[in-house]
Image (cartoon, rainbow, N blue to C red):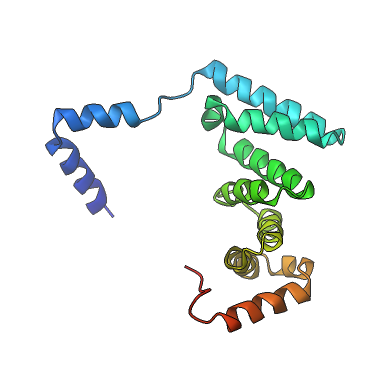
Length: 173
């Protein structure tokens, strides 16, 4: 457990000053508090629009927040909720590429739940991204088996047929 840490420390102490200065330039600085606050304000406005069923406005607000430099400083749970809501809105608008990208980010969170994985499955399946559809299905089966009832049986059969017909080519990585 401590070996990677010690290796990192050893590499840091033996790195040349030129390497250290390059690393500092590549590391993004912490977002200033006012940028984080601005991102949180956009998120708050986005959820207000979503509650009022003004989904196009909510999507714009969420996109502004997500693209802002302050988004990285927003608390993890709020980032997750924002990515999930934004992904679900994109999916509802049939913008499946954007939806899947957002939902992949949302499901990378420790806060991801069965609804997030169900949404990811739906977006991936709509794009015929069967590898990601299967990955999402496996996560649901492992952690939230009751959510599998929300997946149409024909989708499961289609995934199975796809992987059976493409043995060796469609394996999950």
